[in-house]
Image 1: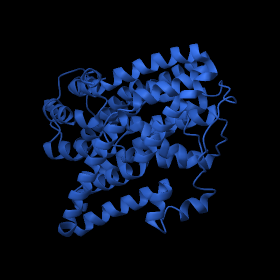
Image 2: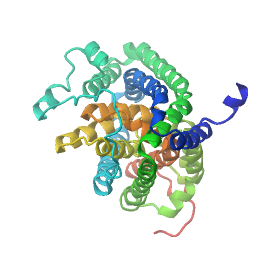
Image 3: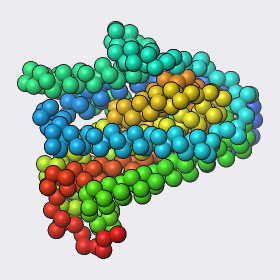
Length: 411
């Protein structure tokens, strides 16, 4: 048992992926006999969605500390977080629409579970149902958008209550930490779920499934590189007006740690050190913006959620209207806000977004095995976004010591 836990989780998942592929090829369609293990894993993930979103989102909003902070620094940071988040999710949707990674698969031989019903049927329903008439029922039914709206309102209410709301801040902070621990427990099931699911998929669909999976990985990396190379470089060059090469040299340590750990939270101390020592961002701006960003700014995750949802829709032949694209954009952005900065939460958020537009959750069977490989790049994108926005806000508020930047030719 000690030997098992001594191996990093991502290595166990990769090993399970390889063994599952081999088992699927050898066993063929009969591998469906172990699919129940994967179903158990998916059910465990679904169990986490509501409490993880609720506690993490309320704690994230409450971490602002004071509504007044949503002024010169906080207001700019939150606006940039939302803008880049929307760009990210629409980029994922564009890549999924353009390249159609799941369109070549014939999944007629796969028996899926109950397909989640889309939460909204039209624009008027979407607007009306964002307000939960019964928060308890919303949580019980796992209705995505009203749950997020309710969590945001609770967080804002805590801030407005000021001193009287402080006890609730502690409760929600503790709840968020507890849910992260529970998530870590469920993530230990990943190797077994991945083994069973990929064996079932490979045994049923053969090599075509692996080709589609490889395309998903490539598109995930492409989307992240586009975000970094166009959106963040654009902010640095034209808004913050800092030397881009010097910036990336300055945050090199944070990039290395984020890619290796796949955790924004674990990288936060390194990110803060890089921003303050190498980039010259003032402590007040860096501590507020980077810390808040590690909690609510997940551009890489938002991009991936849009891409993965279209991947699942293409695999299982779910027709999505433009209103569904809007709903994906909203839930993916807000869902990424509630995503904990730890490895594996992309899979949990995936159930939230897919359930909102009726995409079968069996999509997880295709991506779970390589999620860690994609998560590493997504986390690097998240940390780069946090650093970029912190630098941009510091430049806009005059709290950037440009002399601290590592000397480099402007590009």
